[in-house]
Image (cartoon, rainbow, N blue to C red; front, side, top):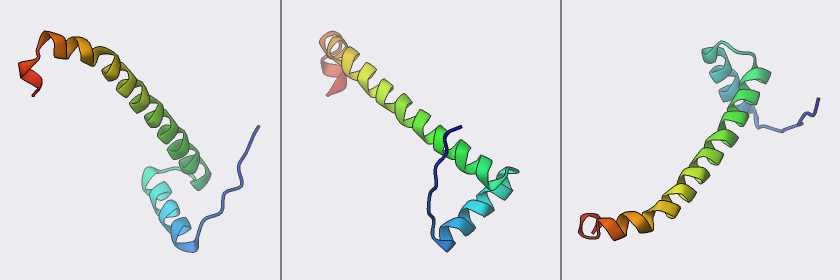
Length: 68
């Protein structure tokens, strides 16, 4: 399975360990989940922006005064 070797400062590791403990997860699982969730969040936002850009011209044509 592919893996990453990522370096963190001591303070960053302390924060990550604390967050993992609060989430009830191992440090490894917490870092995995946060990384994947952030990638998914970015993909969602990019998709939402693209969809908004696609439909916005039709909305402004239909409701020109309501958006200014």
